[in-house]
Image (cartoon, rainbow, N blue to C red; front, side, top):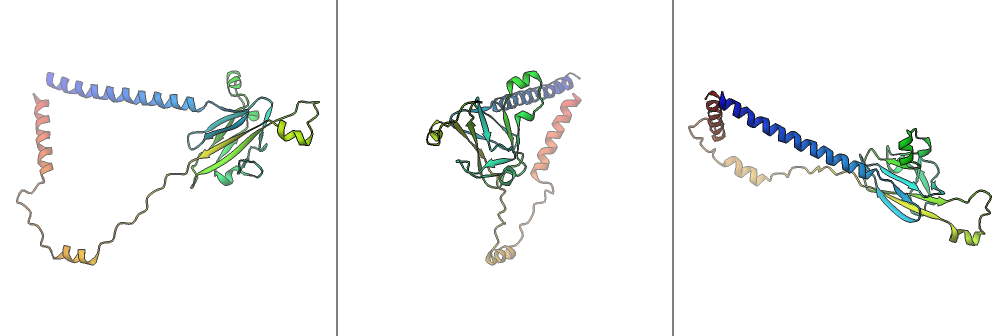
Length: 218
């Protein structure tokens, strides 16, 4: 009985170590997820980020700036943002959440105010790059600058979003065997099997089984 208790105790220790390892890995994954939710603030120059299955992109425009395209269902296909296309044309199933339409509690509202969330549930067949732009808006009652000065004084920021392609699955066909190889193989005489009927690994398994049973009975 003492041996059986020790035997069971060892297995209990192994199970405890495995459970602890799983908990540590889960905690690490949770920490990584919380870091990825930090939004990118696009207020000047150029910003870049990545999105993909299980890894949404969080971003927001600077104070007094608005997002372009203004329609959340569209995206720019060039950095200049002169051409807008439906987001799902480039990234099937993708969705951009508009912060003005979110229903959040008070704490979340302070933390995620004006934050857009780009969700890409499916990886594209090829690598895709899409663009957004944040533009400054004139304050109410302020006369916009002349056309010649407007481009110089215009405040804008561009966001480049990269989405990696789905991993490719190998479809390589098995190598064909030449006729010469087949002929050589068929003319060889079969190797005579020994008189031991069972393979070596079965004998080893039987030995280990006998030892384990012996330990349990003692």
